[in-house]
Length: 316
Image 1 (cartoon, one colour):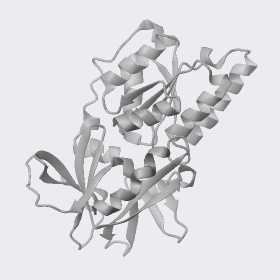
Image 2: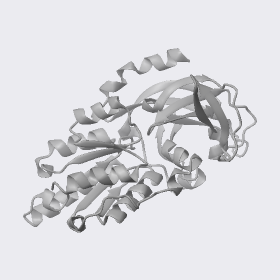
Image 3: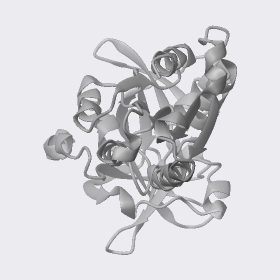
Image 4: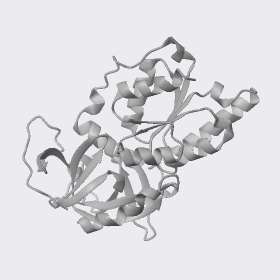
């Protein structure tokens, strides 16, 4: 398994190229459809892949959480992804993908892992409504490979939030508030419905006006319309828009490419870009700064998010 992950050494060069590398995996044949679906996860979130170890059951955990395992002395929750996704299969998951994002480590049980592919975010499409409904909003993007195989990207942030009840505990009592925020506007882009909900709750608690898109491509289209409206009013864009908040992983256009486009367009001069991501490692922050990001804040921490946003808004 370790040999599989050695092929991702070049991934740190992908920032700003709108490319990503994904680890393909399967969850088993769904008895309802008779199909074995293919899923993907960004290798940035994969720490290691191993045979499923012995799992110790733990009380008062989500139904999809099988229990805990000890990895080098650290207790890690283990989620059965097939059970979580509602896929009924006769096969026992033999592989565990250990993931690390937003400061949390967890294991995902899967049937098998396949390979690592390098793709362009422009080939990742927003899933159709029927698929979103069928998968309970679990899929954030879908792409078709050269061999005709369809691959679905899982919303791992949704998995984390729902298996740890993160999205049930949005404490906005400590968010930063200021009367000056009423005149400010933030535009944010995120493909995760859970993350969008938390951002909206935080901005509403701060009293900040906001608009959003579900990926970088749509955000860029809307930002250009805002720039055109500013030109008609003979105003600089920074008088209308005061901050862009962007996720990293998004179909059609990722946050790195969106940032590069914003920073290379003189119309958006003076507008800070704050990267808001579950990819919280130092290397990912370095990648963000390489394309011009002005700040970086981890997801699922509304107090820190409001502090970061406030710092930029009070400067503008």
